[in-house]
Length: 297
Image 1 (spheres, rainbow, N blue to C red):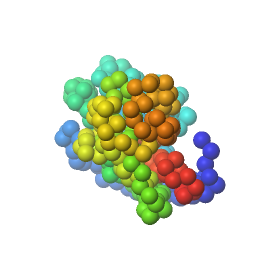
Image 2: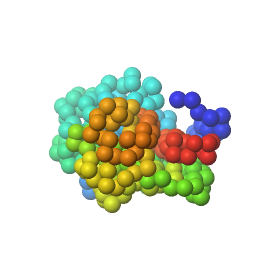
Image 3: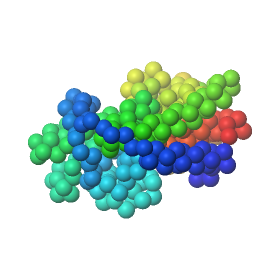
């Protein structure tokens, strides 16, 4: 994806800052606490064989310089490109515990969904350090990065990453604050029809990019809705991935929605905007450029 020169410079500066922080790694005490299942975390030595079954944690690990330690990922972990070279171990839900154990990890990172509860229990019973995290909000990205930085004994580098992402988010929010705030509907899935709720970082990105989610009254990360209700809420724009946009354009039923009828469908890069990880700032920039052309550089 082509980036504006200023945006590329920000990534160059981030790389320099991370390199500098590597020269001053923090010495860490054993990491102790609880994960999002309430399970105890106690990790002394920095792990060297990590199975990361959560795209967000995989991206964070690579940015913290630990990509070479990852020995397993999900099929959806596609960034950076080198992540594709790591063996995939399913979709990250309903984990194949035997396959994970066969890789001999010293740390497993899971998404803390109900479907993964039994897998976490079995991995812990086998003596494997297992940390389950629910990364749904921008704040979750920050605390996850802090935790992984501590586990890797490199909290300084984690802080550089967090601060860099936050600066970009703040810049986008400041730039769009005085602009008109269009009302948007975010198409996630077509059958059943699913959208983003206020419990998702994606809705937070919409706010930062200078728009309003017409389904912010859904408290969870997402929820099913009806096409008739979308028409009733009458969004100014529809956000959709390439596949979703094609479905909307090709289905005459969508003509009851004014934004679809008027071709006000904004196509998002789903590999960028659907990850609550180190590219959150870039995701906010991309959304703001769609919603406010020419305003955000």
